[in-house]
Image 1 (cartoon, rainbow, N blue to C red):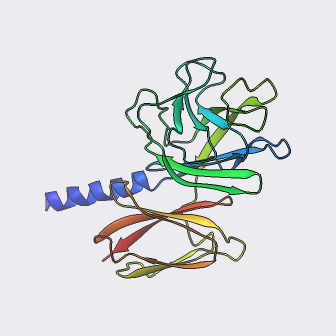
Image 2 (cartoon, rainbow, N blue to C red; image 1 turned 90 degrees about the vertical axis):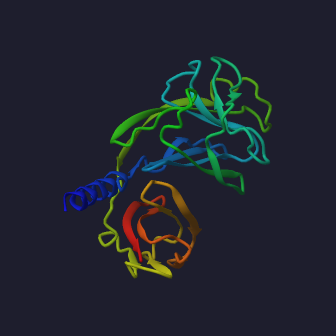
Length: 256
């Protein structure tokens, strides 16, 4: 009896701990015409980042710094093709060097007009000394950014007008689907789970995590109703996250 009670408490504590999601919302780093940059960070069991910038040149952001301090963890959009060395570290002043361990997973790399959008994810603490450790608590974070001064990917000095620093704040995301007028059914589920979002919310990321915080599904959709097959997942408790520019939501899902 004691073992069952202890297991139940541990399970409840695990669900409670990793169901918290903190978000910066979408932050405008610079709004220069045709050269704007935005950043969004959602921190839960992992970090999910959405970064936008100009599609015709390199751009970069760094975490936990107010200047080009040596050892600062940065990401760099360094090509208009595949980002094979997105994860970088600053040597001080000069071009950021590729990290030996590429811990960011690029989920999408798209261009619409003159805007490139990168979505990527990684662990809060990768164990890599070159990587910033993201706290999963309400907190503030200094961000540095830079972009090329002309439309090319040559990693040369950006000039004083193409760099900046800002502070972003993580706040707790809502975990109440009902208050946001989001429906998820059936729950428990065994074949498909259906999501319905408000009419004014037509684009979002749906991410499903298992009890260990491992991402098992990620879907981007631009409609108000979606059916997600879950019959390929093991029985148990999962967390469903919905992330958009307007909200961050998380809710538990049981698969039986």
